[in-house]
Image (cartoon, rainbow, N blue to C red; front, side, top):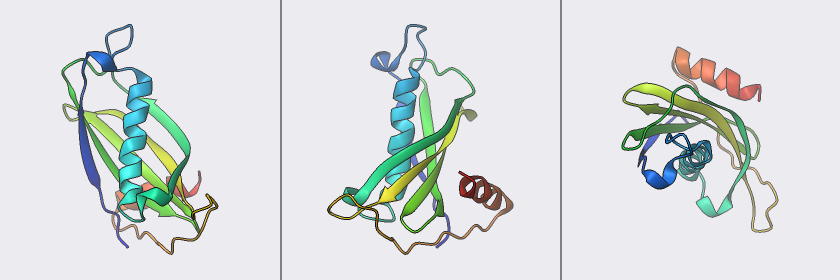
Length: 136
């Protein structure tokens, strides 16, 4: 299966701000996980997807009220039951935050189970992102 990018957007409102009047990191993390979850849920039923770990979420610029953050997410690597998403968020075309999130495919009892999905990297960028994900 090839990598497929899904995009969501969030408008930064007053309730999303910290005491510096910029996007609160916790809200940004929530949106990052949401974007990754949507990518995983595009491949397996959402009721069987659990978030296991957020890997290296790095903010590169502040986000101001009224700005729109674009989250591009895709599953870039899979294991037996794992699905690793890479999420890249931009604001006004500039990188805002990016990171990897590991999700696990589970059964009705919450135990990991195989999903049978293999992701194929096609471009040099995808190959590099997949390499990074495989080392997590």
